[in-house]
Image 1 (tube, rainbow, N blue to C red):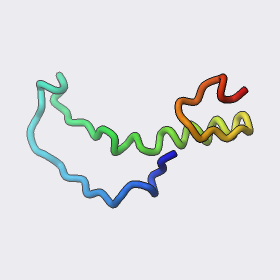
Image 2 (cartoon, helix red, strand yellow; image 1 turned 90 degrees about the horizontal axis):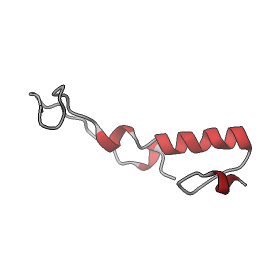
Image 3 (cartoon, rainbow, N blue to C red; image 1 turned 180 degrees about the vertical axis):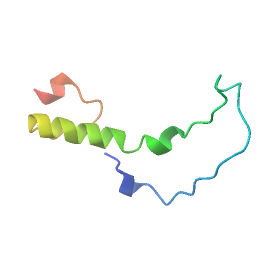
Image 4 (cartoon, helix red, strand yellow; image 1 turned 135 degrees about the horizontal axis):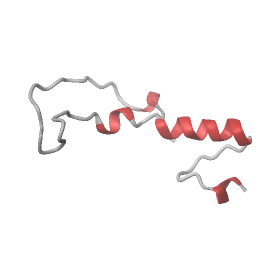
Length: 65
């Protein structure tokens, strides 16, 4: 599973202006940049709760049985 250490060095840039077509509030999103650590964190939480290490997504009840 990917973790934050697997991604290359990234440089965040900020753009001026609003984007009302993409979002009614006019804000711009970060997309995949902030999502990279979510799946490993959930997998670690499942491991801590069940003692079973799951290394493939999606994590289902059948995988844990």
